Length: 161
Picture 1 (cartoon, rainbow, N blue to C red):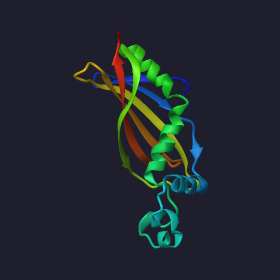
Picture 2 (picture 1 turned 180 degrees about the horizontal axis):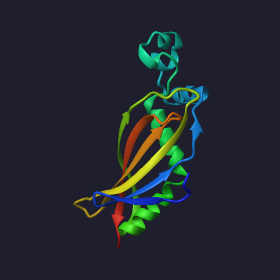
Picture 3 (picture 1 turned 90 degrees about the vertical axis):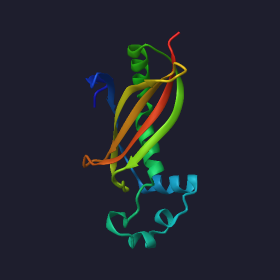
């Protein structure tokens, strides 16, 4: 895993990339998350009904909000490197905060899956107020290289003063 932020240019935009460390998802992670946020729906608390589900969802699987949370957590220790690099190179002011998120679940994640994030960040656009929107695209993959979840955080930077 590279220990620094890598950059590349794609369609005239600079893309900032990093790879997270890996983490194995456990049944305890899923049970604790489900109880913490109150997802007391049959797919998450009734394993007998889950066994009757069609396809690959017939065993305990992680809810999508847990996958997004894990994806954010996997890059949390290093995302400041990306924020600092993009602010410096793109001439932006202070980081303001997250203003949105868009997500798509591509494949289920099960206890025992080892997950990792490929993060790509780039400037999206400047708002009418002069603030800069940046996309932080997370691709959460499992040990088989399957993309589990893709989600993009929209974060806002103030203009450089």
